[in-house]
Image 1: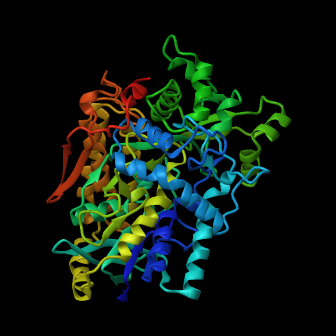
Image 2: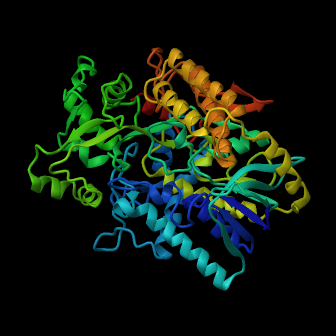
Image 3: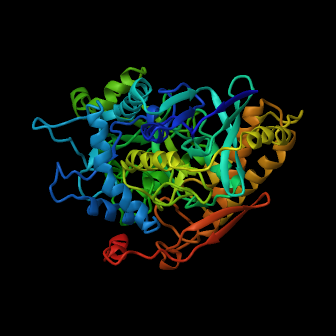
Length: 576
């Protein structure tokens, strides 16, 4: 059994985890960052791909009317008024400083000739505030933060060490305090113990819970599940961002320019099917064009019908062998594709896809979990010493989020989580952490039943069909039953200890998505209840909180969100 001690354990090496590690080490902490993959080359921040990876920051460089307050308003409205207001305001106010910090550390993002940041309009924003460096924004951020870790290790006062190819399985909590965690090797199932008085959960989302997703391998929702088992509540977990993405031969978000170029979209029978789904009075061309500035599925505009059409064709069996439909730009002049779609054209050419000749296969793919572990403005949870950041954090996003807020959030609350973790006063109980391993391993003993991968495949397809774009009482019940069945089958499942631990997490989280989604009898943001007439029902302007009672997921609709006095007219903006 491998054993380590540190001041701060960071679970996850993406943008949020690395920013937390940098901040904690700058405060003098000895930090261990545990990653499932290779440090500096794993996690969603590094691997996500689209024509523009956005970091939302209200500099006002493209439009001087933009400001952090305008960003805050956009977060609240796009979130369906279900964001915790103070958390949303924190992102809006601090995002410019965090982005400038990355630039100062060597980020070299796109700028105009006069040195201002290039800012474009992204979905959910009233002003152009999306900064970055095209499709490379995420990798640039990770590279910058890895270099900061190296510099800290050279000069101090703290230190950042990495424990790669390791999955953290569970936290160790005693009397309301965290004392570390235990895990297993990704390749050898060797138990690993890390004693630490502070832990930052930044393990990313649960993309593998869905058959069609754009997450990197290993995104099995570990942070959510271990926090829930430790006693922390989840919030807003029914809200998941789903966007059209290439599903073969690579994952690539079909955002922006594709939808503004009059694409031809067909099913396996080469039928242009979208007209069959668009209601009378809705302009089909407008609905398709709107997808260019409304990438994730939303009930707020006519682009909704494009996603509904594609989802239905695939779920009813008229998709390709890779569970997609076709999009082609081949009817357009080569020079137009090469110029207007330059970034995706050049990126896809590297992977053998020529947009001038080839149709791409795409589908609505899960790309971000808006909900997470409830936190305060310091990124602290209800357990002393346990902090959250990035996709594991909850409350800062609501029913939807503006484009660019995920990266901004990762840096704003990554920094805050690292600072809070470095400030924890209690000492870790290393003996308690070591003792927890035996009981944990016993719960995950292998059987001779179905292979764990088989359980995942069946659950993930049922979740995509029942709890993604189109949701009904019946479909959500089927998804919930599938998650329950997966939890039961896990008892005698075969496969590695690590994979069975991942299946345990995904089966639990399948229930955590389906239960509040079935409870919320309205449509709002990314949540479309096709069997409910209500949209943005004021009676549902409330977050749903999830807890574990024994091994049962319990949901509670909290009191309505109270908007600050200085945010007037948001209800009208939501309806408009």
